[in-house]
Amino acid sequence: MLRLDTGNALPFLNDGALDQLRPRVEAAHQAVLDKTGAGNDFLGWRDLLLDPNDALLEDLAATAAAIRADADVLLCIGIGGSYLGAQAVIEALTPYFPPRQDDAPAGAGDLFGQGASRSPEILFAGHHMSGAYLRELLAYLDGKSVYVNVISKSGTTLEPALAFRFARQFLEDRFDDADRRIIVTTDPSKGALNQLQRERGYKKYEIPRDVGGRFSVLTPVGLLPIAVAGVDIRSLFYGAVAACERYASTQDNPTLDYAATRYQLHQQGYDAEVLTAFEPRLSGIGDWWEQLFGESEGKEHKGLFPASLQYSTDLHSMGQYMQQGRRILIETFLMTEDDDGDLAVLDSAANLDGLNYLAGQTMTHVNRKAYEGTAKAHTDGGVPNMTLWLDRIAPGPLGECLYFFEHAVAVSGYLLGVNPFDQPGVETYKKEMFRLLGKP
Ligand code: PA5
Image (cartoon, rainbow, N blue to C red; front, side, top):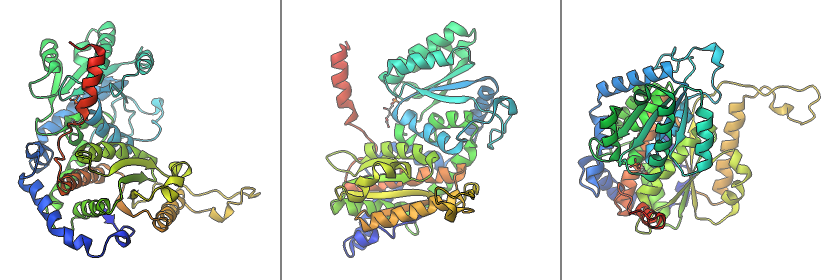
């Protein structure tokens, strides 16, 4: 079970502040449960956990199995909430380096377990507008068995729509069964993708209307790519279901402690939160978290600025600012309790690098001491920090972690007095861009 340690944040809080805040925190939490707060028609991300659709999970698994059996590459086309969740979970739950191709035949693995089979490569497009990226991507795909999952709730977002034009053409030029290789994930009926899907008979998954993009990782938006990557989507989903039940309580609820602590620190003048992980495979969770908190809280000139870092890599770059820059920062460490495989430091006869004092210690131990040292140094340097501990990096705990942040940001948005489920600010740049592009 997930655990939040706020020990290094409490000394920075004004005396009695959390106790005074508690009634407001509980009211915000209740507004999420009772659907009485702003944006309450966008709480479908909880409903889908309160009433799990097992048939949909099975259907997604079956589609994923068929793709795994035939594809070298699944190209996922989407931006923002339509790709960050899938990318985060896939990065966290698949090996750093793919198994050797000749060791495992395609599609031979167990879809609901991380089998040893090789998985199709999961690539992303439509998450920016680089022509160079698209050109090189299409050249890379040439000669491979490619499937495309185009994911857009509105069906009108420029980046994925442009990328999909290229991907469709690519498939139609090469495959007689191009239409079978395209899976559309979009609104139940609205938007341009629906018209095309109907005309061409593409397989389609629906994004519930009441689930916003950044809350959609546990809908087909995230679940199909994640399943194609070979991850056990049932355990992921049910990890979130268990968290949704657990965090409905006001007692022993770390989502409320997290929301309250960061809110109170924000009131005291801390304006940015940095999420850091010492395990690189968790850095995608940081990117997903940035969008979740940035889009949910950053409005009406309010909200902590969210930024994610990866340690110890970034201790050698941003570590300087963290330690001695402006004291507007709070930090949340994302850590795992388990040992990642006991790779022990080697003994060296010559000991020229002087590291024999570490010989026999596991890399996990060294990495853990780096975390402990960093937490202490940053506390001493004036950065209030918390640590969110996951049991291990596995589908169930990851599902719990996703829900933890979703619930926390909803409560947090209500504490700030904003609607956590809209994003009016992202339209402004689009208006300017479309004007410059001459959109009729
Ligand atoms: O969270 C959001 O709502 C956004 O990030 C959207 O997911 C993003 O803009 C993509 O929108 P769409 O799925 O409609 O293409």
